[in-house]
Length: 445
Ligand code: PLP
Image 1: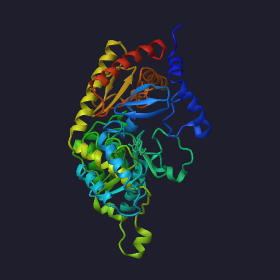
Image 2: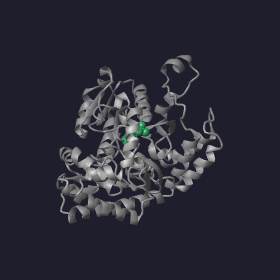
Image 3: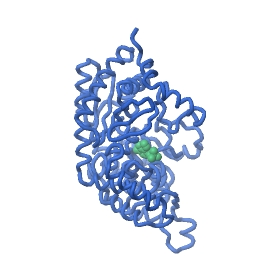
């Protein structure tokens, strides 16, 4: 009798199961990040290079998780590795201001000039936390508006309606977060009726890295106008889109000027690191003024042992310099387009309802419904997108693709890098065709 996908998975990744059993006695839930679990257990990886990663069973897997979106140049690109290696023997924490932070901020500003001032943090979560704190201090108001399903990290103020649970978050905090549908008329209404709103924050390419696309650039342009009209701080969260949608991020691609921007992931070239930047008059609320009242009471505080740590700075500078040439994004985007076309052919040839869509180097799939969008910014109603993303389909697709040698982002997306080439993309498309057949045989499709 033919093995089911689960049986094939258990067999192919049998040594990973042993590691997962160890992990269960060490970590809550056996894992170290809420999205790292996959049923029946996650594969355990040991090393990676270029577009590939290698697991404890010796399987070579084509990677489209790419460091949760951090690795636009693939795993361990030579220029970034060299910069990191050089710095690691020159001090990893200089315990004070450093020349590295200056060069790092210059490299960021060069690609995102809306950042008149920059502050580094260690993660995207810290960056959105700091941006919201700055917006409150600047406006003297308390609430923030975010959008349904939009993800900005895991601190209390951005967790509501982000696809995460709410355990441990104070009710008082929940009362300061207004969740709006993706509809600029509704945002305008909220800002007109509530005089206590400090900021509007948005995932610049739509919830969950573009799973629920925005009609851009119109939607972002409208938000820019509405927030300016109501004196509310407009925060573009570019943690995913930064340096990917163009060398200058979503704002560079669509010529937008937010008040504040948050970046992470690519900005630190695969090392821990992130930043916040924007209008000088907002950012300068963090500066000391030689005025005791201000310095001890009014000033916006920020700590962070590893802010602009030299190794993160070295990796970030090497990455941003490569991106500034334009070649990295061009290659990643070209490969992503090839992948998107191949996936759409595959849906057609296998007579499975569904399609691939996406812009730049992020490709999403929607399975089980037809849609006649332009395959760039999918216009499928959000309720229908939910219906294409049922857990059996997502889990099934991730499992099928892993069995066929490919790791997707969450079972519904591909984050493409400049390390992917034509041959690797074509292997991925074959694996996808095979996975569609496997899922049909298993009764999932
Ligand atoms: N904002 C967005 C848009 C993200 O996608 C993420 C993480 O995936 C974050 C913020 C949080 O970043 P981090 O995981 O570095 O805390």
